[in-house]
Amino acid sequence: MPDVLGELFQWVAPEAPTRPQGGGRRGQGDREVLAAIVFVATSGCTWQQLPAASFGPTGATAHRRFTEWTKARVWAKLHPPVRSRRGPRRRRPGKLHADKGCDYVHLRRWLSKQGIGHRIARRGVETSQRLGRHRWTIERTMSWLAGCRRLHRRHERKAEHFLAFTSIACTLICYRRLAC
Image (tube, rainbow, N blue to C red; front, side, top):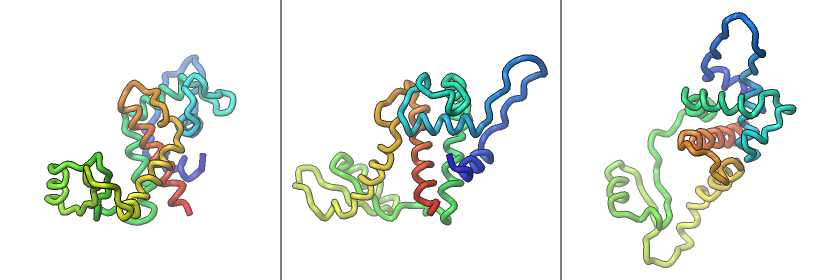
């Protein structure tokens, strides 16, 4: 895991609760646990398959901290600092490109009211090569998300955990693309 991403994570991670003096094992550091979570997200392995010898924390520890950080919305807070390293965010998309699955009159009307242009393929009309010239960016982004193997097969029962892994994947994509 890159050091810059670990430093950005330190800014948004909540403080670890301090234990009262006494016995027990030393807690795992945030960076080690973050590296383990990123490994689970990119490799697609389950929490039980996490190689503790490589990362330090066990699968149970990584999952517990992942759950705590998901409840604290750490993944949603981590994405904007990574994304904003390249300038201010656009507030509204210029145009929406979509396929026939999004061809609804109420959606077109809503987009027009919001001032967002749209290129949505129409149902019942043969495919057009002209739409493909613009929609390849969506296909490319979906391909980048497919690189996060945890999203291939949904192991998570909770929707917030699946969305957290999606946010981790988007953060990693932005970090890799904007680091250049």
